[in-house]
Every structure is written in C-alpha cells, then in structure tokens.
Length: 359
Ligand code: NAP
Image 1 (tube, rainbow, N blue to C red):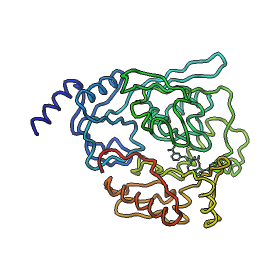
Image 2: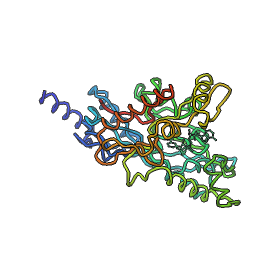
Image 3: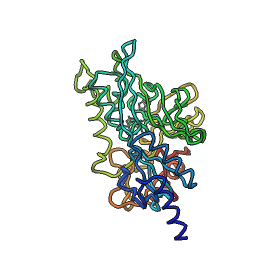
Image 4: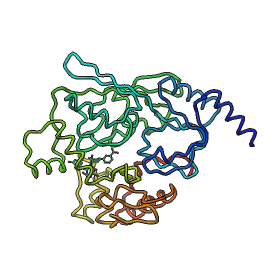
C-alpha cells in the first residue's frame, strides 16, 4: 500500500512537478475548515489547467477545482485527490462599436476587484454585486446575485476547459442555463466543464437599479438624489457590512442556504400559517420566500450557537465558525436547521454551500 501511494505520488509529481502533497485546505477556505488535499496544485495559466486535468485523468484520481474557497465546506478528512486552485490572472477591456465595453476576465481574478475597476471606468452592470467574495471563475457557477441584480444580466460568454473533450470551448449566456443561484455548472451535464474565463458586457450609459428595499431605504434615509456608480458601490458595501460578517475576522461561507422558490399551492399553505411572512412573487406560479426570516422569526435561530458553530446574530442564514469548528460540526448544525425548518414549515431548504470530500 505504502509502495502504491509513493509510486502514485512519484507519477503525479512527474506529470505536475509543482504540485504539493498533503496540503491543509483550511487556509484556502473562508470557513477556515478542512483537512488536507492529497495533491494540491496552483494553476496560474490556462495551460496549467490542461496539464492538471491530464494528470488526474492518467492517474484516475478525482479532481476538485478551488476558487476563492468562499462557498465550500471541506471535509475534516480533506480531499483524496488533486485540488487545483485557480489563480489565472488577466483582464482585457475591449471597447465595442456601440460604446459598450466587453471585459474578458480570467477565472482567478477576484470578483470584487473586477467590480471596483468597472466602477472606476464608469461602466454600469455589476455595481449591485459589490462586495461579493470569491473569484470570477466561481461567479457563474451559482449565478451570483444581490440587490436586484444577477451575474446573468451582464454575462456575455464563458470560456471553459472541457475535461471530456480536453478542449477549450465557449458557452453563450443561454447555454449556461442560469436561474436563481443555478447554472449548468452545478448540474450533471456541466460537470466536465471548468471555467477559465468570463466575458461581461458593461454599459457606458446605464440605469441605476435602486428599487431593492435596502437600497431604496438608504437613499431616502440619507436624502440622496444625485447618485453615482461609486456612491452606489459604497452604499452597497455599507449595507452588506451591517448584515454580513467580515471574512477577515469571522470564518464563514456566507449564506449557507438558498432561498426556496415555492409553487403557489405550497406557498399558500405556508402563508396561511404565517401571514406576516414576507414573500416575493416571481411569476404566476412561483413565490420566493426568505429563509432568513423563517430562521429568525419561526425557528428563533438568530445568534444560536452549538459548540463552535453558530447562526450569525445579524443574519441567521450565515453560519459561522466561532472558533475551531470541524466540518462535521457545521454539517450537523446545518442539517439540524434543515430538519427544524421542515418540521415547523413543511418546506425543504437546501444548502448553497458546496460540500467537498467525504463526510
Ligand atoms: P434580503 O435583502 O434580506 O432579502 C432576503 C430575500 O428576499 C432574498 O431571497 C431576496 O432575493 C428576497 N428579496 C428581497 N427583496 C426582493 C425583491 N424586491 N424582489 C424579489 N426578491 C426580493 O437579503 P440579504 O440576506 O440581506 O442579502 C442581500 C443581498 O445579497 C440579497 O440579494 C442576497 O440574495 C444577496 N446575497 C447573495 C449571495 C450569493 O450570491 N451567493 C450570498 C449572500 C447574499 P434575492 O436573493 O434575489 O435578492
């Protein structure tokens, strides 16, 4: 067995000389949780991605692609395969004939850095998505969204490396099958796709999207009439700061659960039981309900802790590592919440955070 492991290690290191072995993953996640990766490799260029995929294929070992580590819960046992951290950098701004700008961003760039640069260049489209952690490559996976905007609103094209065909391919926004916190990249049909680059179409002349209640309230409370892109960014950063923990101080992966979208029939049962619950009608048959409200007002979970895991006091949708929480503790805490919500409301909620490795 020992011989087998070291032979495998030798072969992997021949194929990927810069790979490291037995690397703790906790420092690479915003939860600060997780055991070691058997092999760990940083892809700094697109070709590195190709080599890593080839190596994993040749040795028949599982591959996991890591971005900013802000939406994962890595098992305490770690990952028994090759973890590839995407650090491919590069941003290219292309003026279009119609005065709009196409920006092509490599997957390893920080999302919020791209937002800040876009605003510096006075380009509209991503300002409401200010302050979201993680990399550009991770953004399309869950179609990041906030304050009435979603990535899909500005996304033009995604470049992927297809593990099956071992080719780089382009996917239009339609082909990405975006929905609320959903995309092809979370589904079986997209499991062979690794995002290497994302193109956005930004506008030189855009409209501010300020109807969302938190922004609207801020503007009227502060009597702001003449808004600029940078003002809107700062307002959003301030609103987020009030509700979400600072990742530099608190271990968390942000919102742990997705807000469920219910069919009208199911929703009607729920609202009859809890008439004061806020809700958002998406169309004739679908209604979105805020899990944070359910966790706070029905399950009374705001600020609740168990061991080293807790539901954040200002936003219970956010689970936090209050000390040295293990992945198992977080998982158990989350499952308890899922059961609690089911018992009290009858609805099933799902994790937004991806579980990595064996639990
Ligand atoms: P919030 O403003 O308290 O809203 C809670 C829920 O109500 C969300 O599902 C939100 O939908 C929905 N909602 C509020 N106003 C709405 C409207 N006018 N129309 C339709 N739906 C409406 O949420 P929060 O926890 O403070 O978070 C602030 C924003 O950051 C939210 O947009 C949230 O989705 C976003 N966020 C995104 C991520 C992510 O992309 N992974 C993580 C954390 C927070 P929406 O979710 O569609 O806004």
